[in-house]
Amino acid sequence: MKHLLRRIRFLGLLLPLTAIGQPTPTGKSVILDGYIRDGLANNLSLRQESLEISRVTESLNQAKSLFYPRVAFNPTYSIAAGGRRLQFPVGDMLNPVYKTLNQLTGADNFPTNIANVNELLAPNNFHDTKISVNYAIFNTDIQYNYLIQKQLVSAQEARKRVVENELRYTIATAYYQYLQTLDAIRIYANSRSVLNELSRLNEKLVSNNVATREVLTSARYEISKVDQQLAVAEKNRATAQAYFNFLLNRDLTTSIDVDSSLTRILPESKENLPDLQQTALHGRQELAQLGGSLQAAQTAVRLNEANATIPNVYIGGNTGFQGFGYTFQNQAYVVAQIGLQWDLFRGYEKRSKIQQAKIQADALQTRLTEIQRQIQLQVVQAYYDLNAANESLTATQSGMTNADQTFRVIDSKYRNGQALLIEFLRYQNDRLTAQLQHSVARMDVLIKRAALDRAVAVP
Image (cartoon, rainbow, N blue to C red; front, top):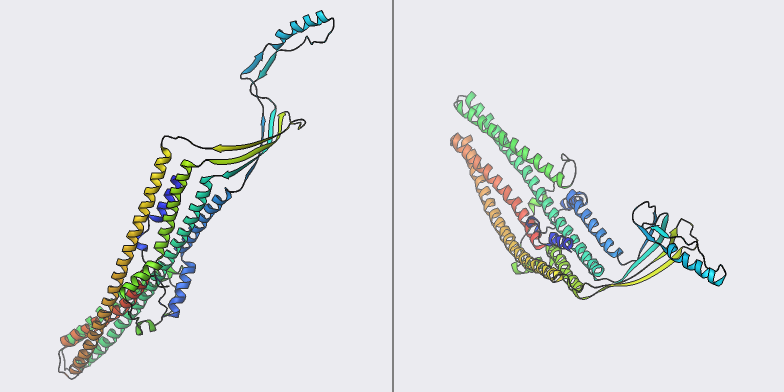
């Protein structure tokens, strides 16, 4: 019973908070959806969940096997020497009596050579070769244990679906982060091209004595800074690539196909918040997992209540050979049994077990209510996070447009000698920063959309 309660507690009370969400594919990218399918098929964490389901299923099969009769072949053979003996002077008592009777009757009708009994209590050269059959006609432990194991299998299957959905979200997020690193490399590369062109222009200005040499060294310094940022961006790309391939259980250096349409057509949020919360409460697999554990705990309560009031009935029998020496002659026997087991008093142990099972069920019910409230809170947070991400994207789009237009004006002025180098570099850096912020904001919208889908449990 304690073992069952521990398993119920493992599947119910120890729900990891990091797996509260439930992701789904975006449905907007064939490439990404294909990667998600590969991840579900190959991810090692998901394989571990499948193995755990197989293990729990075997426990269910073991519980089911208890409904069948048990047949066992049990031969034993005993050799004994020494030890206690059974001594009885039957010869000393009867031989004189029989001798006197023979004399009175004038005949030898009574034996006068009866030996005294002197036998080992432990049988020597004795065998008991039998087949035993046992069958539980009615046993509450077997019946309710089978139901509990069945409910635990359902809870474990729901746990696997939780991990599957979490993996979908993780893969999608890792893919978006990889795309963001590619976008950052593109932005830095474009900035380096602009600075290279500036360096060539300044070199001409210096050679024509139009400008002094510091404009050239300043441009080269800015190039070196961008080169450093490019190196960091390349490192981030390699790391994101390795992490994404790790989730798919592939070689970490495997190339990743890019779906550029993901950043051009961003998802829109038109759902109503209360509707999203209701969808989440009906679709989240964490609730199904905890519900299975709660059912198992409630069944454990009924098991203990039945143990306290209902007896167990069984039948059985033995058949085989028994005797001294393996002769099998005149040694056959058959024994049939019917039995009842009913514990009338065990020091209030059963009452304590019933109370313990009820406490476990109440704890799971409380946990279920808590998870429902957490799910509603997560939907609210994901919903407003997505709205904030969309507003941030709009702001960064405006900022990038303004920064680009300003830079174009300063670039034209600088080429015509109407602006200083420090102004050119300032607005070039402002444009670079605006482009990076806009790139991050675009990917953040995709990630926040995936997080909302995970919280709502969109199929």
